[in-house]
Image: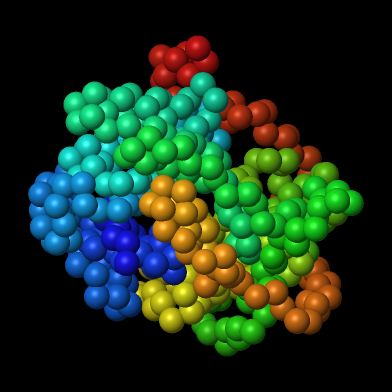
Length: 413
């Protein structure tokens, strides 16, 4: 069985996928106590519950029972807030490598240099590779060159932005994936196995994206009060049709003109559609931040785990908010399994048998029921009806204009 050193393990999304492909997590490093509680509830992996900055590579290898160069793969997704698209949307200026949290990327590269596994996989948000703002990727390239010069290795980074839905995950989730091998073997990313229905041509026989209904049709979470929506906008969600968000209630939508176009973040009052994949599960949502269930409630931990293709036997500890944070930060396990199988074949010289992935989602046998009709807008919300200006554009909103002038000018250069 192949061995993996896991950094920033979180709730185990990457690890479950690598496990399904025949890897053993030899050691997991995670600072979040709730995530560690979840990991211990499900697996007996050695866990180091500390900040990577205070953990030496020697300690990691000792806990894993491995020596330098012996691990088959190093996996991990350094916390993504410095490169988050949501931060850039709000201000036009995510802090990126200037953010103290970006030191986690340095930590990953330090362990790579000192442990020197046969291969590595690093996952991060799509914003890591935004054009003109790819300092993180440049750092990876420069560190790999330094590692090779010092240790005689031949690591090269192959980088791709993957949409999890294109590999059978019932969720639109785009992430940057970086893969490399110690001996310099080039890595070819797997070909997508599923295609968006509107992108398929007559010669394409791949199945369409799996849907939220495919993932959730056999789960019944009705009657759980912890899933009830609360807050100022709770009673507005039933007035929005499936597959829509607050934009329904703008002058360009089909409802009441209650909001300005794009004046809110995309996931505000966002509701799943049964016949489409889920939108990205958020890690730190506000009370009105979706995606929400088509039954006008929050998603349950089991439902979020399904949309993230975690194994059905995985228990996510804590309440709904705890589960959402853990699952929203995770890598879809099916995507991890697909990548792990490709790493086995191409970089480790091991066949994983060309069978369907163990974590694959089985499409629902019956089509989903028709969407329910949206409710009427409660009277108290009608006071917001009127003319609202549209958002002026990325980096031009109120939060951007509130930044110090020096930072605004730097962002514009």
